[in-house]
Length: 359
Image (cartoon, rainbow, N blue to C red):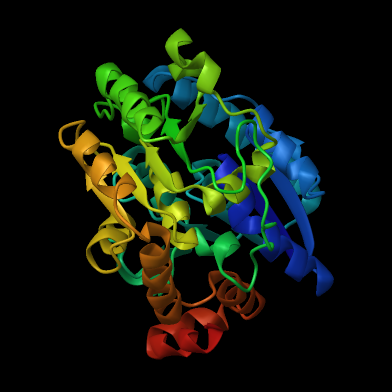
């Protein structure tokens, strides 16, 4: 089978890296297109995945529409030469529209209910929607729900790399506790009109953590950097960030992906964003793995509560084990689904419990 995958975000590299490796070992062939962003290219290179650069993207509605047109043309040209049997993406309108123009099926994964811009541009052109079971949006007859999370494509125990017992970071010794703070740029389509931590709360976080003998590391998108935080910025290879999160004692983040990743790893996570999602809601309400806030109000109190509690990581690890016992390995499921497509659609429609064999 010849499969065309489009990558638009660093997380997408992680979603598909194990799937690509397994499918290639079975004799399938891939063409990968990727948005021009250094962290995406670094990750693709790290995992030895060849790629085509489809450009940087644009800001603003007009710019995004213009980029949609140009990216579609680039992908269409490459796809005509590659002749794929199938397009797969995580919410890519470019892959959806190129597939539609070539009359080639597009399987789209998505876990972000509020990404209406993307839904508008990929929904009419996609063949199947694969969404986590907690996804709140109804896409109709073409939708199939799988009992897992997107982050388990790479953080499920069947696929995750073994993290070393010792973490090498400046100022970190064996018994030194540390927290990771993640600030986002607010430039994504689904971020328009939303917000997270205010500047004073960010500074207050650092103060509380240091006063309680925590080392502080900050990961921030370039558009949201502030000179005040320079000395706390983490400097690691992007493929090591999950290693850091696995060892961290706390994450405070404006980004949903990192919050969910820490939930998969059993690390306490505080998510601060006026946006919500079915995935995060389930991880908070059912498994008590994250704590969500719509604004900065109450965040410092929750941080203080967590860092002054006893055996916190042990408690969250138990919550993680409960979650994992109830979820499938989505990579194994996707391999089966793609290899048996379109018969797999019929099976999942008639017998959705079939997926439970992929635990």
